[in-house]
Image (cartoon, rainbow, N blue to C red; front, side):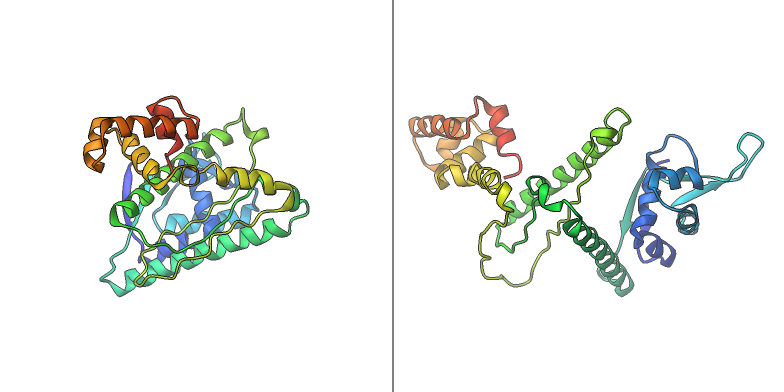
Length: 278
């Protein structure tokens, strides 16, 4: 299997990818080292075999999965993902492509809202607020900052996928805790007024949530200190930082010590990790 680019506007592809459970079953195939029967996929997905078979048929029709006929060695039809990594392409100059992208986005957001709504009313939800976090805002960013945010979100996504694979391994499965993350970093066409900055937290987790936000580098450091910390994180030397900001090397050195003390770090590596998603 290899990386494959597929046109999102293809009707069969769109039908498959817009049905989140179908793509969850595709992911089970993609992660498996061998072809699986419908019953095996159903067991992994905790879903009825009939529903899983419908998903598999949908995937085969879209050429996202391949079916392997039964044989003397294997009495059941088995399935495997048709590619190692799937890239869905759409063209903003093609009305059909634009529509397909909108339909996919709507379907994923609808499924996300469904999961969140079910989680919020589940008995005992109030007892696990310390593990939950939600937020939404509109901001105005310089282009460099926007690219950094997008890069950080991609890094976070990669980290989540790796953590997910690790948690689903047999030796960790019993200790794994399910979560849902939804984010949408979208270019707007006119500036929205600044959103009010506030935190919503359940009373039992209030202190911990407050401490997490209070410990944010943006809250702990002054604007100048944050500027210096960011440049140091990027690998610049103190003399380079001084020249770029029009400061003396001694000033940068003094402020660097203050930054390290405020953030509780002891070296460049710890500083980089502390500012990783800033």
